[in-house]
Length: 164
Image (cartoon, rainbow, N blue to C red; front, side, top):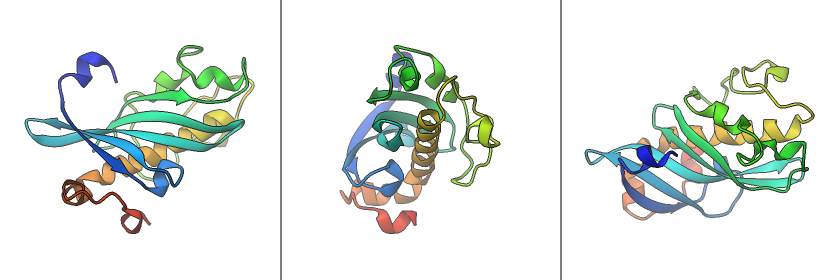
């Protein structure tokens, strides 16, 4: 998230575990507040099915499903091919900023090769599809946060039953 936007929000951090975040680990979650109302979140997430293994990311989105930003934190993708998910190599990941995720079934939110609207990069399909799927799942999770926010405030961090 650009710092000029990030610093305009109050933040509260939580620990969360949910299958939509790609694995069974506990992830960091930051809920962003504007005028004391929760409006967005930043979530650590994992794309477990990258070509060369798990891809760890941060995804920020408003609760309406609009993506604020997505960034890869770590990966082991093939240099010169799959590593184009990394902002230091390519700006491919920036294409998600401003996009919306309607639902987990959103047909537009997949690679163009599979009938969606997202362009992959040359030489790789598995890596960009893995990142795309992970961003979609994470935004679906973020969209559900307002419904569980009372639970978050009570310190409960296991929400598997709410997201089936």
